[in-house]
Length: 149
Image (cartoon, rainbow, N blue to C red; front, top):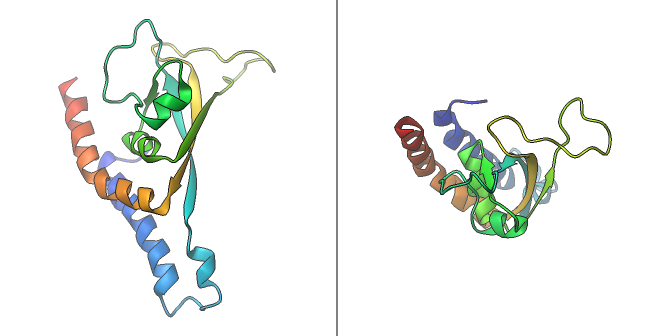
């Protein structure tokens, strides 16, 4: 877990490092194509909001992530995960078995949260760069929302 203020610079550094690897003379020309990523895959921890208790919230997934799930919204603990899910070209979620659960047993919802899930998402390079540009504003908005509640 990182302080929210560190998230935007770290994600920006990732994009800058990829660009640097593709353009620097320090990287041998025959290796540069290996850093020219066009697609990215990510996995995010999230929770299925209990449908009876769910009300409007900015932390819930909308757009691609909600459409992929179909039955209920997802709640993300990290605002950057939600931002990536919204810009993703594809998403799918699956339940995570809790610790100590028997093999084949349905995962249980944690107290105060819905069922724990993992969301897999795919991003184009352009979408990644767009989210990274938006992260500073999203971090400020998320921090303000947390202080207000």
